[in-house]
Length: 199
Image (cartoon, rainbow, N blue to C red; front, top):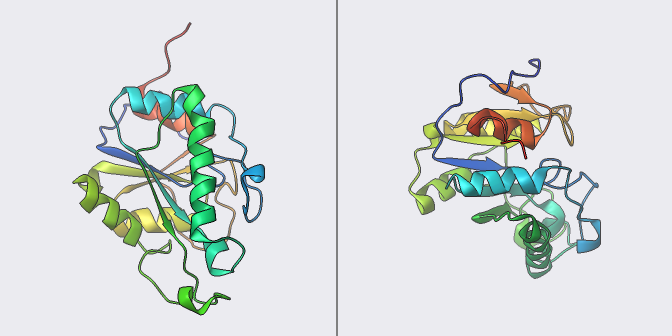
């Protein structure tokens, strides 16, 4: 893995910011099955709010095999995502969309036992979001904590940034390397928008 990048380097110009969920926005807590497990990482709300204020779409791209394993229905997953938005709202932060993959090739539920194009490291969710939001993926960035996030970003033609929260790139699923590496989401947002103004 590359060493942490200098967040004061020249800020790139992006059309949108894609975020993985677990380990980037909220704490990594194994398989999240209920709202009780959902806890925001420090500084995340403020970082997302800065992207909102800059009119950059903030789009979550997440694998959720919890559905395929039968531990949570898609309706229950929707409630978890509603709660995530509720946690962010008092911090002035909004998610423009959440795209999730409920599939797994070894799913307990046969309805979700497929090899799909949307489960990262495949780029299907990114391609779908780009179509919905009319984005050029070469002008977008995916910020994740796993190597599968990096591989999905590269497969879609987007920039692939790693944060050291969550798995910090140590999931061992892929040999993909990040374009840049940061301590956390706040530091990566500072690389896009510059450092936050001092109070």
